[in-house]
Length: 122
Length: 160
Image (cartoon, rainbow over all chains, first blue to last red; front, side, top):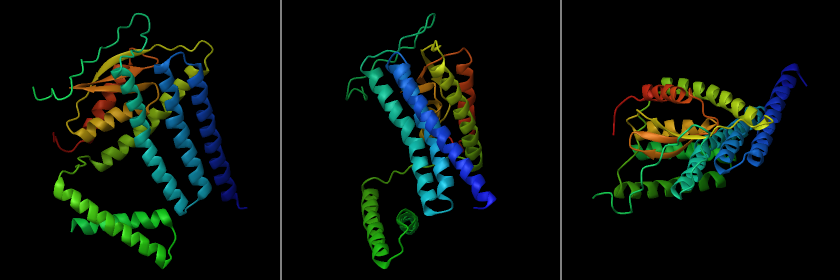
């Protein structure tokens, strides 16, 4: 094993291990946080830091092959779909009337009332 | 002309995804590309609308690099909150005005807010987003306004 290979191996393991740590931290946060809204934020750590670091680490393991291309494409898709699905869950909660508990001394913004279906042109 | 471009892109994607260069597999790929082309051209007959990416590529790449740094910083901040013994969370739902003129710009802004842990775009309304923060500080609106200005600077045209 040449020196370069050892360096790449070490780097890739650094990324994979730190990505896994962030995934675990996201899971711990999902359990520790007190309510629905804060738990969403803990899950987004797994989504962003965990996913990005793991993909980088796996790319370094795969080297310059087609697998790396596929991993990068997976990364780009998760980069777009991750926040979109988080938003969908949060929005569904808001629309059904669940409001985040406000911290002391803060007043939350109220969403505009939703127009009934088919009333847009009126 | 446009169909030839689509065919090249799709076929390149097939080759990248399969990685097997046997005649039978490549034939299947060509058949799939032709079928997809047939479907997309029929869809165009119904609906000629397409999404224009009105973004400056160099500026947008710089923005992505900056966003990565922001994601790293926000991750670290939320990680500290999760691991802290007393979990100093300070939840707040607040309005964030946006200045992007194109749909794509607004989507990028909303998704960037959600991508950085600690803030989630909850609802889109005329002229502003509703953003939920898990540990709200008085600097947050300024930081989001800075992000907003950076994305608006990436837009090349003011389409509606």
